[in-house]
Image 1: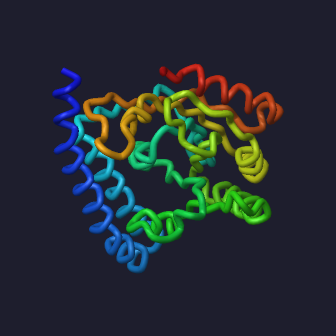
Image 2: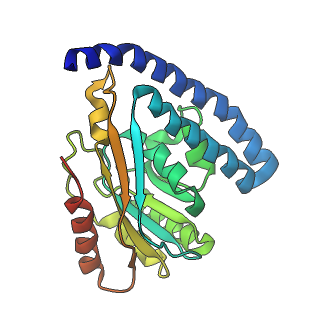
Image 3: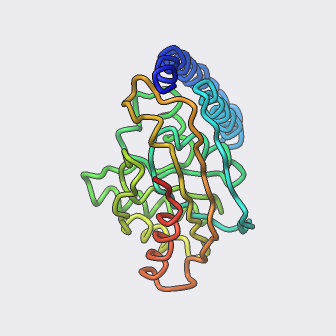
Amino acid sequence: MNFLKKLISYPLSILYYILFFSILLVFHPLQWLGFNLGGYSGHKVVVDYLNFCLTKSLYVLGIRLKFINKQNLPEGVPLIFVSNHQNLNDIPPIFWFLRKYHPKFVSKIELEKGIPSVSYNLSKGGSVLIDRKDAKQALKALSNFGSYIEETKRSAVIFPEGTRSKNGVPKRFSENGLKILIKKTPSSYVVPMTINNSWKLLENGYWPLTTFLKITFEIHEPIKSDSMPFNELFKKMEKVIKDAVVV
């Protein structure tokens, strides 16, 4: 059975990659049109459907996605979604499932150029690009990003591990980025989120991709950012996320 599953994964991986890169190429000029003709709103509509298509493309691999949200998330206030990170493919479903909250990502500056659709969206859509080698730049960018989230009442998505877990076991959470965001968004809520099974998609590397997985995204109870000291909030948030990870 495992042999048959791996054998099938080769043609399915080819089909997925063709579809994935075709979506990026098609939506790049559409984003440009949306942004230049419709401003933020026009661009967001295109980005929403970009991520819808990228999310649905995973079904070619037999991937089942489940988004679990039993919480009543507050509206009209900035939200900071904090999650473990297992795979680059975590991002399109988060964009799509949370589109109501206008999610903006904390991303590395290397993604600013060179990737069709992705780089344009990160540069024009309100996300923040930080240089991990330049603490001064990162601090200023995160501070400005926090002010933007507070003013617009949109949401931020941050992965405090800093890099993706290759075996599903969460890495150490870094508090610096979240601490700056909370400082600049006094009216915000921190929303813990746990991702499970996404890492298995790249269990064999990028070739072939693992097929027929069930990947879940689970939203936990939001925490008012100023309801407790930061250190206490951080420990609570980290525990909630990690306790829900299944390896």
